[in-house]
Amino acid sequence: MTWWKEGIIYQIYPRSFRDSNSDGIGDIRGIIDKLDYVASLGIDIIWLNPVFESPNDDNGYDISDYYSIHPEFGSMKDFDELLESIHNRGMRLLMDLVVNHTSDEHAWFLKSKENAINPYHDFYFWLPGKEGSPPNNWISFFGGSAWEYEPDLDAYYLHLFTRKQPDLNWENEQVRKEVQDITRFWLDKGIDGFRLDVIPLISKRLDFPEADLSDFGKVIETVYSNGPRVHEYLQELNKEVFSNYDMKTVGEGPGITQKTVNDYVAADRKELDMIFHLDHMSIDHGPQGRFDPVAFDLPAFKEIFSSWDQAVGDRGWLSIFLDNHDFPRMVSRFGNDGEFRVESSKLLAMLILTMRGTPCIYFGSEIGMTNVAFDSLLDYRDVETLNYYEIYKQNSDFDELDFLNLVHRQGRDNVRTPMQWDHSAHAGFTTGEPWIKLNPRYTEINVENDLASDASIIHFYRDLIKIRKAHPALVYGEFELLYPNHPQLFAYLRTTGDESFLILLNFSEDQMEIPTELYGYKEVIGNYRVSHDHEKLKSWEARLLTSH
Image 1 (spheres, rainbow, N blue to C red):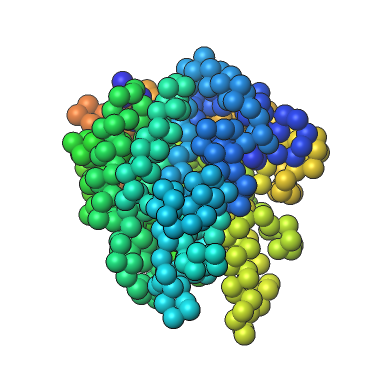
Image 2: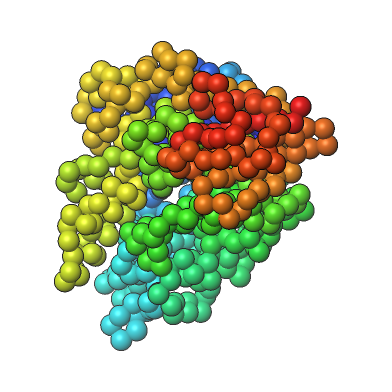
C-alpha cells in the first residue's frame, strides 16, 4: 500500500474546529475530543493548519517560534497527546510548514533589523530604495507594496504577504540549515509529513525585476515562483532530511504549471511527493485576483482536471481538492447552496473522491457547510479582505456594498467560520464567544442533524470513501474525460485492466439527457435515493457506475 496515494486527507483549521476551554478559539484538546468523529469518516491523514507560536497577523502563517505551540491552542504536551491519539486510531498527521517567510516578531527578524552587519541581517532581503520609493514595483498577495521601509536601516525588506511576514533569504546557507533543523525536530516527534506553504516562492530572482502588474497570475508564475534555485533547495532539503524518514510532503503550488509540475513531483526528482495545483481555484478570478470575478466555465473547469492529470502522468502525483482555508466553500462556489445544497454537495464529494490523486476534504464540507454573508465588514477577520478593503476605498467609484458582495462570494472568512457540530448555542463549537461569528445556517446544517439521517451528506462521504478504498481503479486507474465541451455534464472514466467506472455529474439545476452510448452501465452509488432513469440525470445528480 502507498498510504499517501490511497489515503484520504482531512484538513483541520484548528482555530475553527472545536474549542475545549471556552475562550472562543478552537484548540488542540478540542481536536482530540473529535478524533473518533474524524476517524469514523474513513479519514487516513489529518492536515493541521499552523499551531506554532504566532502573533496571528495571518492566522498562524506568520510564525514567531517554530519550536513552540501557540498558548491559545494548548501546550506541547497537548500536541504530543494529539499525535499519539491520531496514531492510535490508525491515522497520520501532516503539519503545515511555513518557511517562505516568518513573522516580523521572530527572533531572527528582530536581530536582522538591528543593523546591517550582524549575521541575521542576511536571513531576509534588505534593499535600498529608489529615489525615495521601494526597490521595485512588486505587490503583495494581500495588496499594496511588497516592500516595507525600516527607517533605522534606511532600507526596505521584502514581504510577499503582509508586512508582518518578511520573506526568508534561502540564498543564505544558514537559513536552509535552520529549516532543516526545524523539520527534523517535528519528524523526530513522529509526525508523518508536511504540507509546505507557498513552497515555489522560496527562491527569489535576485535582480528583482519590475513586474507587469496587469495580470497578477502571470506575476506569480514568472516572477515570484519557480525561481532559479528552487529545485536545488528542495532537493537539498529532501536529501538532508525528508529522505531519512518515513514521511511524505504535499506542496502548495502557486505558480506551478502543467509544464513544470513534474520538476517538483516526479519521483526521480526527489523533491516533493505531490502538490495542490491552483488552476481550478482561480478559474473565476480575473487578472487582478479573487476580488476581480469572472464567470465560471464548466468546460474550462473540466479541461483543467484532464490536462493536469495528463501533465503528471505516471511520473508524479496530485492532491485533489475543491476548497480549503484560502478559498470559498465549495458548494457555494461550484454547486448550489440553496435548493440543491445536499445534492450538489454530494456531487462535489463524488468529484473529489473519484479523481486520480489524493483527495483532501476541508472540515465542514462533509456536512455541506456554505459561505457566509455577514452584514458588515466589522464582522470579518481576514487580513486579505481587510487590506483590499482599504485599497479599494481609495478608488473614486468605490461602492462598499459591491465590495461586501465580493467578500460574500470570494473572501477567505467564508471557510473560517466555526465547525457546526449541533444546533445549540454557537453550534457546539464553544461555550464562550467565538473568535468569528457563526454561520447562521448552523441550526439547519450541522453534524448532529447529518448523523441522524441516512440520506445525509456525511453518510454519502462515508460510503464513497469505502467504495474508493475497495477499488484500485478509483485510485490508480487511468482518467479519460468524456464530452469535454458539454456545458452541463462532467463525465469521465476511471479504468484499470480489469475494472472500469463511469462517473456522471450534472453541474446544473436542469435535468439532462444521458448520451445513449453511456447506457448499459450498472450503478454503484448515486446522490438520489429514488430509482434512477437510465436516460436522464436530475438536477445536480451524480452517479458512479461500473461496467461489471
